[in-house]
Length: 486
Image (cartoon, rainbow, N blue to C red; front, side, top):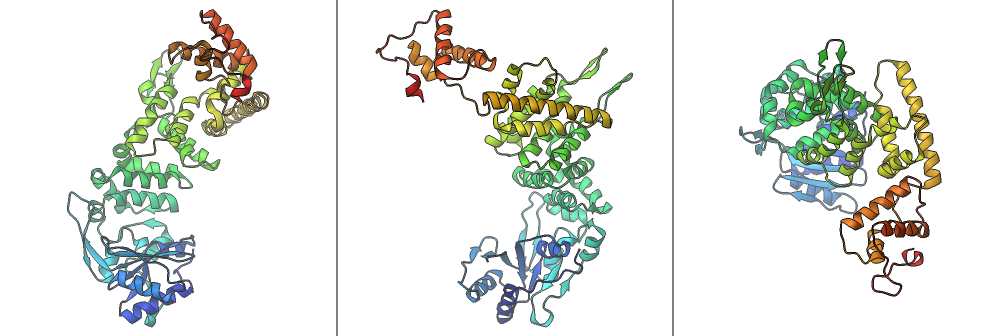
């Protein structure tokens, strides 16, 4: 940690200082860039606050820089953006804010530096470095932000109840910063989050999900979810996940706490280098356990079919959270549906057909699936974990052997629906679908190779059994040859 933070000796900062001095505007680097300098984290976004017109200052700086970079002005927000080769600088005039109860959008008016610092969310984001000739590089720390950085504390500059009621998204940001930085939240600040949690409902889902994804992408996201749950926010923004928490007992039978199990699986996939969507698959892999929970006096608690129900839930969850509904969602849905399948392949009696089916259904996501399955082993019995992981080694070897032989990733049958229709003179119908499915099953069972001539011969047999005759050679709709299909 670099305390107090030191302003880098960059020509850009000298240029800003020179332009601000000429305009008579006291100027400061404020906020996240200063925080990250102290934490020795890379940061490419600089916020410059001046006591004056921020847009005018940005334009003056742009005229002084080599190549006169284009200044982008956002008049509605009173800000201007200036891109440079290494960093992007946003300029704004110092301001004070006032809020209405029904909105997190403030009414803004020009203010002093002190008023601008007071409106910041947390003390560690209310630090500044001077760009003025008389004290260039001097630290501005009105709210003991440097001490909070040293103590690893997230705290609001002013009354946290006011801070969070004014802008409830700051509650999510508090937990996000604590998770990203591995900081504690000041007890009074955390208590205020719990008191004001209902205010989160005036925040748009898109803004909530941005913060949630940042928590998920942190080095240890489980910490953030525990804070969300303890504060009561999770129950409001993601009730299906909160519903995983808890253990029910009957006699000697108790199931694991699926909330904390899910968090361990999430941390495990992070350790394996997972991207955002594999992390979401970890979060959702057991999401449907609560509604599928049943008690069997002989075996205890069961969750039969939770993988299928969970997969059916995924599109709705993504829609509710305003997550993308395209390829990313379909991948997560696939992993949720298949996450129990690989362990069934451990038995030595498992056929190549079962392995082919898993490869076919998982496609290019088979490696992600195996990462999720390994992460799903969370027993406190280390010998049991080691045994399961050895079993997955066996599964992966089986998958490798069958894949090398049959090339089933992104597998597509050579006989398409169009070929079937042309062969038998059929229009789109249930019969075409049944023939496609029967041919696919035969290929996956290893009865037929996925080569045109062999598969086409099998198709003719299937048609004959159904009383379908191929179109005569030369007739309209005659089946294409292997060469024309190539």
